[in-house]
Length: 510
Image (cartoon, rainbow, N blue to C red; front, side, top):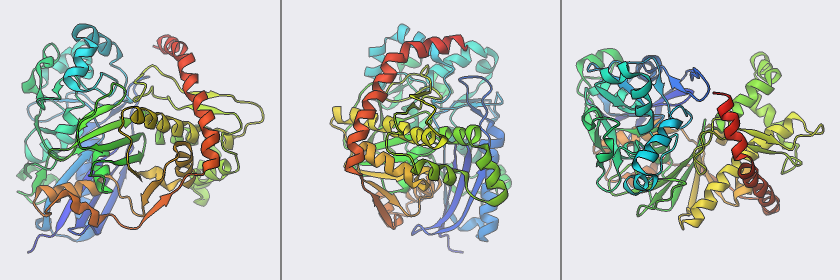
């Protein structure tokens, strides 16, 4: 039997996705599995690793194989990605030692540990060694939080892993993490040597961390036990994999210097591929997915999760109508917002509803509706939410411009690309063109391609160009761009003037 298929699975914030593809990128079968995000208390964000990470992976793979009728032996290789960077302590049998995996920058529990490490090591030293400053995105402070607050769990941990590492370890028995993800485990990863560095001291022993490799390296083969659980063939190669945003960037052909992925997901995430590393404390400098490549990355804490919150909290009538009539609640909100002029008639939103990651790196920042009047409607508020996220994106482009790192090409991906108004607002605010592939299957599609690279099914990672089809372009409206520039000034000043009050409120809520 000739093997001719690739399999990719991605574990996202609110849902997991999987695909089986042919070698030319044709999707044979796809699956989506929604799941919950747990917020045990303010500032915390967790997933159940057994039910969400491994459970979703197993059920998706079984369903993909059943739906497609493809024999497990026909799968050339498997790739996986997941939200990240996140943290899970496991025992020697790869069993979770706590019920919740601690998530990426939307989990801000380790604020005190960030302050402690900066005082102990020095902010400048951390940046020099890691190429990045500490933030809520960093995993080192979260391990230190675990050490201080759950000492029994910390002591029992054989390994500290991310979600992708957890899945690959369950499949192959090997604990391995890709360079891109490892570089976000600040201050543990040495940017120059690309190894676990000397700043692990006082936080965690390096031997309790995964091995570091490249995303397309083969981590191992599916074990007998994993084959029985998933339905995959024993011995099938599994690549190291990476975080979801990087896999999604690959999925739409963002592999060359100057190309940028702008992901409209639960959070906004950006990757700009660089020929050489560029560092700035406001953004993240990373090794990219492939050996010899670098990237500049950035991420906002709430975007799709904010529009979801808005729908659930302020549009229950539309949600009920969707259940009864099938009219999509987001589509209905978009139609309300389309009637509102640019600028939402003097309403500005700071989208810091889970703190904020880049470029302000402030876990204590708070969301704000500013300028509300009795004349404003729900449509105004929803459009202001979309505009606020767009101002946040524009803030990133301003920073990149100051670094001489602006992208030459922007490719938009993610569930938010279904919202035509949102895309247009971002193009107008940022004065940029966005390329939108007709089919954006997301990180799982990139995972399948990365698996093919690892299995030597392709001659180069640029072969992804053959997988990206039917691209349309969103062009900016110059008249709106000029107006939005004035609103962005208010957006930036609003945070500067209210930062201290936000921090005071954060303290009162603890």
